[in-house]
Image (cartoon, rainbow, N blue to C red; front, side, top):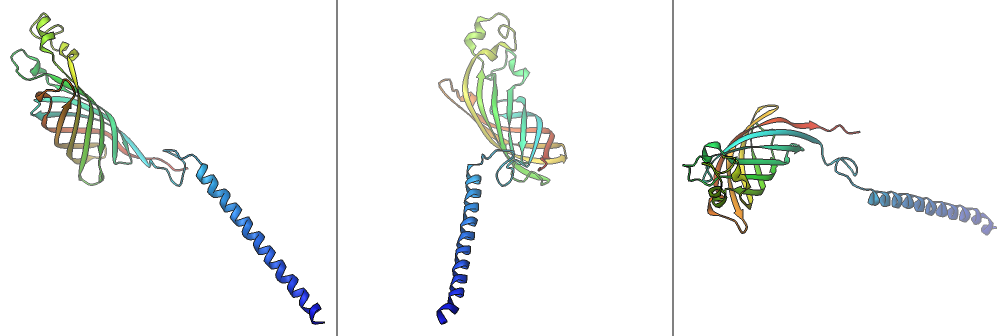
Amino acid sequence: MKLYSIRPFLIYCLSVFISTCSFAQTTLSAQDRKESKDASETKTLFKGGVSPKIKSFGLSFAPLVQFGQLGPQQGGILALHLNNKWEIGASFLGSMRHRNEIYSNDLRQNFSALSLAYTPNANKLVHLSFPLMIGVIRYQDDAILASMPGPGGRFDNFYWRNGRNAFGIQPGINAELNVHKYIRLFAGANYRLAVGNDELPELSGLSGQIGLKVGFFNQKINKK
C-alpha cells in the first residue's frame, strides 16, 4: 500500500528532473550557438562587434612653415581625423624660394611623407599633439646643377628636385590652440633624421614649426 502511494511521487520527481535537464541542455545549446556565432562573426572597422571602433571623423588641411637647422621651409599637411585623436595623411615640406638663389650656401631639399599624429585631449582649449612624418627627402645634386645651363641649372629653381634622395623620419611635439570649431593654431618643435646611403649631415636637424589646421575634426558617425 505504501509502495503504491510513493510511486506517483517518484514519477513526479523523475519527471521534474528530466524536464530540468532538458531545459538546461536547451539553454546551453542556445548559448553555445550564440557564442559560436559571435566568434565566427567578422569584426569590421566601422560596424560590427559590440560597438563601432570609429565614432567620429574629420578632414583638415594645414599650411605650415619650419625654421631651424634645416633652414626655412614651407609646406602643408592633408589629414584624415579619427575619433578626434588620430590623424593620418600626406605632407610636403620644401626649401623656401630664396634658398634657390645661386649665392645661397644652404642645401636645397624637400620632404614628401606619410603624416601621422596622436592628440589625446583635442577638446581642451590648449592641448598637445604628437606628429610623426615618414618619407623621402630629395635634395640638390651639385653635379647635375653644374652641367645645366643657367644660374640655377635647367628649369632654374625646379630642376634640383630631380637630384638625390634619402629616407627621412621626423617626430615632433606641438601645442595646439582651438581658435574656432574649424580652426586650430599649432606651434612646436621636431627633429628630422635622414638615413640611407645618401644621408648627409645637412639633411638632419632640429626645427621649429608653426601652422594652422583648417577643417572639421569631430563629425559624429550615427549609430544604426
